[in-house]
Length: 254
Image: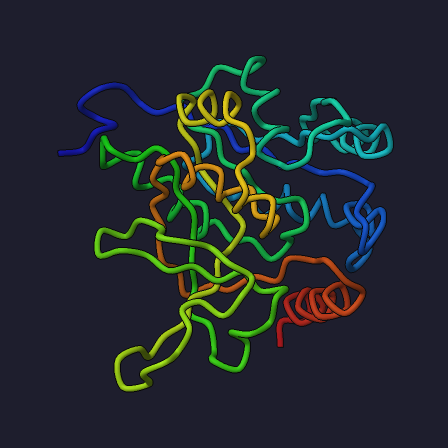
């Protein structure tokens, strides 16, 4: 049964959390990629998804806000005390009427509409979805990289755990044959965000520095959809160079 048609049309609001105070790459949201700030690429590519009812930027930066206003990008100024994009979206939740909120990281300029469809579609077809995210196949040589977050799921597609460590540990190579990278894009029901706000960070979230572990530590399931489309979250100068080459290739049409 299609849950969306049997009840009401879901109002899905995409939010792009963005800040200037990145530790590893300061001001990265405004760094140029082929002549335009990264935040503009994220907004433009996310806006191609027809399942989004609305899309905006949420930032604590006057610089980002001013750029958005000058370029007709809807923007909200939020508190500077938020520790994660999820917390920034929680603040926005009280200013926006929506059934589902989609967290579109401001450092993911390679995002495609297919990513967002994979995030949103479970909310349209199933009544049990509270939080969704994405995974994509990962080569074994990258499994030990702590900058790449790994995820394992149960047979229902729900996350068992996320980690910067190699996950799972390959003790018997004849049993396990695929690692999965977690893509840091999320969709949440309003109820899930309200519950998240009321919960204190748990030890696993604090140890791994992964905000999504708060949901798992308190028993809130996360559905993990698989996508063949990898992305590169821009955290370093090397990431920025790789992403710039990607867009140069797209623009050349080669």
